[in-house]
Length: 203
Image (cartoon, rainbow, N blue to C red; front, side):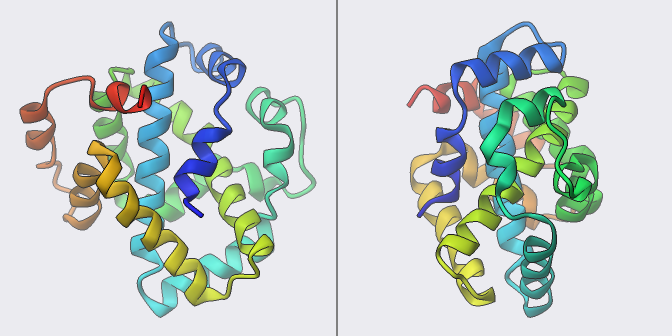
């Protein structure tokens, strides 16, 4: 099962509209495009983190402790703040981003902003709102498939590999995740031109 497909299938028109309003955006297509980039970036970063035994163990423990997938039961409530889970760590988007992206967080925001056309402030706000959804989907899949640490790592790496063949942005995102975070990946974005994520979302 492809985690990105699971996440993308959750993005209904009403949810995208609500997210657009929540982040102060004006163009739903930019919100949708940025969401696609956020899902791809966080999935690629999780796959890289899970490539080491320590990373796999830390991710599995975090999922078992804080992310049972229940956030997917009421995404609208999570986005609007209308529902509050018992475990606040499950919806702490800023904290999740810090753990997944570390020092790459600012550059990741800039990259997704440039790829989608959404401004940086709105992009970061959207990242914080969607990060719990990524962890929730991963945690739910882990439980449904009874995945151990190795299975979890395989799920993530297979998702990235299959997406590299169908999503143009994934090759750029993989380069970004693998580099030292100096921002040079922006040269690749300029060469490709704008609207990368927007075009992908329509596929």
